[in-house]
Length: 289
Ligand code: AMP
View 1 (tube, rainbow, N blue to C red):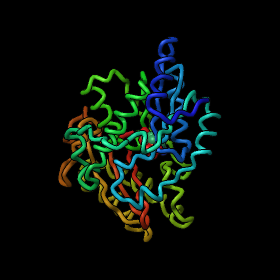
View 2 (view 1 turned 90 degrees about the horizontal axis):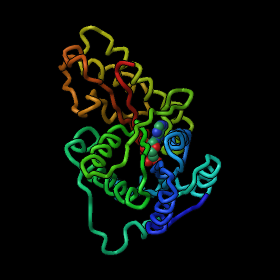
View 3 (view 1 turned 60 degrees about the vertical axis):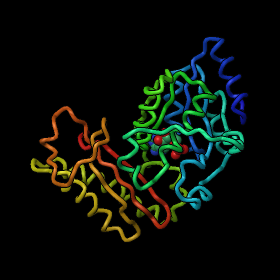
View 4 (view 1 turned 180 degrees about the vertical axis):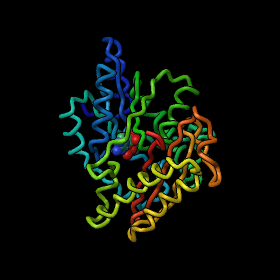
């Protein structure tokens, strides 16, 4: 397995792979790899001949410098994990290689970025699509696999690839969870053992929401209210939001909106963001499974 740190070296590797007729499946990550990332790698390997994993903690997409500084970076372990998983190449560019002096171009996402996570995290999705466009330019994949854990990110990247005629298939992979239901995340290692036990309230709040959605007179408010109650019962947790949204348009429902009248062909999901001290966890699930 090769580790490549320079965008032009990455492009040379990819062009060579393509010239021998091999397709490239790409998994962009920020490292601190866990089973969720490994599931994406396995999906890429099923779809394509060669798998490239990028590891880059992208400063453009962080709103808080403390979150950026404290983001785990176990690069040697990550490289060993990729090698054991049969990855062909790890692309781990330096921040200087990605954003050299004079760097000035950004990709601007559309309306999908103005909803849900967008307003609370100004510039976040612009940072995400800018780095993903750069990674796509260096890796030149046939398919790229993204987790449904970051559901809005998946929708925005799918729109970018289509809108900018990138010719890259964007594939969404289901959320991989710990045995107690907590969605796997690189940020979970930052939880203290007590916070980690308390964090089970996040998936449980989504269970409660899904039960509430089964009532005939369910509204978006009754569903998010059921989720909020579970979080409120956990003293270590602070709810930032829970919201019911349309999985295709990301349009959020108002409290009074009835779920039954929303239209049978719409797929609805609930998403939530919950804080444990300075660690922010996100999760989402379809309301009908
Ligand atoms: P990250 O390293 O957190 O930026 O995540 C890299 C990719 O892995 C993104 O597409 C995430 O959505 C995906 N991912 C992270 N955690 C999970 C998970 N628990 N299940 C599925 N995909 C995940």
